[in-house]
Length: 202
Length: 193
Image 1 (tube, rainbow over the protein chains, first blue to last red):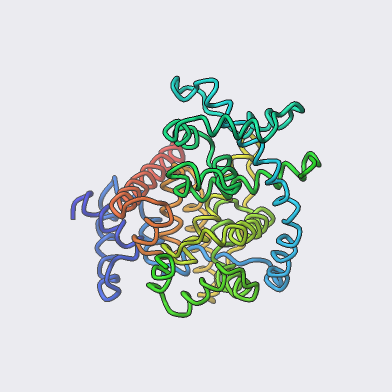
Image 2 (tube, rainbow over the protein chains, first blue to last red; image 1 turned 90 degrees about the vertical axis):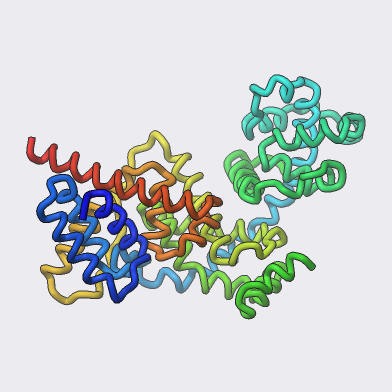
């Protein structure tokens, strides 16, 4: 066995991709090679780990009694969640403002500015947000291509807010393909925003 | 209709559970939490290293899953989807922790497989060495090792969770093993110096 074969076999064993009937023999071969190879001798710990059944490699247990209250704790958080969801009305406005800003400033063409949650939060802080009808008008006047680009370029959460508000899915092709975890990130962000700042929700 | 067909591609029980979950049935969600909470918690605990953070990540994962239930399209199994969420939640938590002192590892090893004290101590030593070395790997390699070596996922499942090809998962794992070997060699040199 040469060192590259050793490494391949070791990887297969750790990955659990070796036929159980052949596993014992494979480990003996690896140990034999590691025993006389200066380079692979250092990997004995890995061979020992590979020899263990996967469930015994690093079992993790939660503290005693933890699971008893887990489902209830999740339920409690869900019950508290509607406050965050109410923020969507406000977010709709903020997200639309972000799109308008994006379109107006031409950052899409320059391609160097990536508005993040902080920037949107700055917009949110502005007391003089334009009326929804004004934003709606700007968005309506943009071409579908411009809107699609704007939506793609925005953080997923913002784009999702638009879609939730019935803008993206209706007006912008491709809005349904948003990354679901960016969407989830937004909810988390809203949670944090509401909890940290006690920001009013609409 | 299309989503419904995709859901049915998995086990019938899971398909029906997923449908009820998507429709907002609290009982179905409770069942899903019970079925997947250990897996979700374990992934979070491996990444975040302490129970309190893992608890927060696990709860947040299910909260996010509930809020996004209408978007679960059944393209992946529920378990795969939840692991994907908990990975993202845990990574967000790690990112927000960046710059802070690393937390002490409070993970409790549950070695019930051997009654021989020497064997147990030896296994703990192996696990400890491996944990330290795995944490030094690049993030993607850590995730692959965690899901493939510790969580016994198939290459296909790991690829789905991490949104990679199976080939890329294999390449990451191979690279991780090489890096672990190199890490142990470096550790040995330091000990001998």
